[in-house]
Amino acid sequence: MRAYYGFKDGSGDWFICIDTDQCTACGACVEVCPAHALEVGENEYDPMSEALVAGVKDAMRKKIRYACAPCQPGYGEKPPPCVAVCEPGAISHSEAWRQLYGKK
Amino acid sequence: MSEGATNEYWRWPESTWTNPDIDWKKGTLITAGVDVGSVSSQGVVVVDGELYSFGNTRTGYDSPDSARKSLTMALGKTDLTLDRIDYCIGTGYGRVNVPMAQRTITEIACHARGANFMYGPEVRTVMDMGGQDCKAINCDEKGKVLNFMMNDKCAAGTGRGMEVFADLIEVPVWEIGPRSFQIEKEPPMISSTCVVFAKSEVVGLLEEGVPENDIIAAYCAAMAHRIMELLNRLGVHEKFVITGGIAKNEGVVKRLEKELRIKTAETVWYRPEYKAYPFDTQIAGALGAALFAEAMVRKGKAQSVRKA
Image (cartoon, rainbow over all chains, first blue to last red; front, side, top):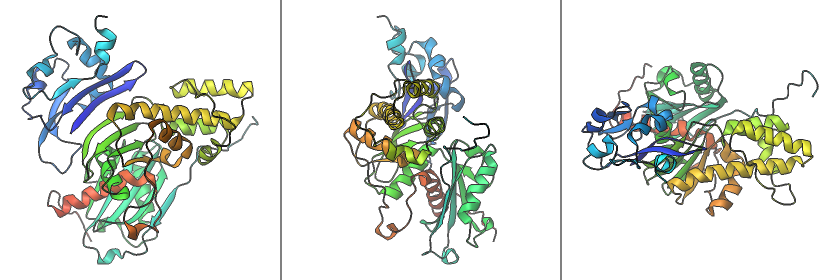
């Protein structure tokens, strides 16, 4: 399952996408996120499954644009720490950061 | 406007229903789902996986009270009591405020499950148009969520937006749909996304003397367009269904179908034996929660709390 956390407003789509089929719940992303936006827990979108997955904390979902911005998702020289540390490559960001803040 | 005019055009009718074909006393597993949304609350009771009753009410200022009211409505004229319910799950925006629930599940999972039961296993995309948010969900044949996208940061293009609009132009909210087609030609849509700005745009149109029905059409078109943006990002697949209150507004639904070039599934029960039962698009979340409760107890993932 691809879980999109974040929001869409007049300025664009601000989402973190976590592919729960690839996520191994290792928790590495939780450790490296400077905004402490991530957590590992039950898969709330699949209540019948036992597997743990990474997700964005409830309180962070409506401010993901600002929480993620310092890591320059999609436009900095290096990928954000959460993306870089994720071995299965389960984390990605939507385009809005690159479109709005990236070099034109 | 005259002082003391108390017409509330946003007030949509509440409803309740009990299945005449089921005797709960013969059932072994009775579960309930309570969906407390920002605008409406639903309670659904399921007996051995079959829909037994539901209640659909407006959410008040007190979430626990609204939860209680919706389930009381569902139990309504039956002699079934709360202590005979095996397991109850809360869902929706106010799910943490459902006092009788043993656990909570997000409304995304519940709507996919509920839509799967209501419209059948061919459902692949569910659009839940809530009171204060909208969610696009792709699911598989079991009603399991494959991916989803939610917009809950802004009330534009939601049920509450429609209620505000109904109040503003003084047309009952259930008449908006039919009246939006009583026009000569499709007007340009309201350009503001934001409910507050859209409201002032509508006031401007009223002052210009634009016919009411044209404004209604323009607003419905704007809402349809906004929903489409969210859907396009996620991807729409047939069978496509809309749940929630806005699904009852054909002014939005038909315009959305036109923009997407995809028909929404008919609002009839998938199972033939349900055909005569009332079909309420608003109960999908609570129904999904009740079905999850049933599956969890049956599979031993949850313990029954039945007292009587």
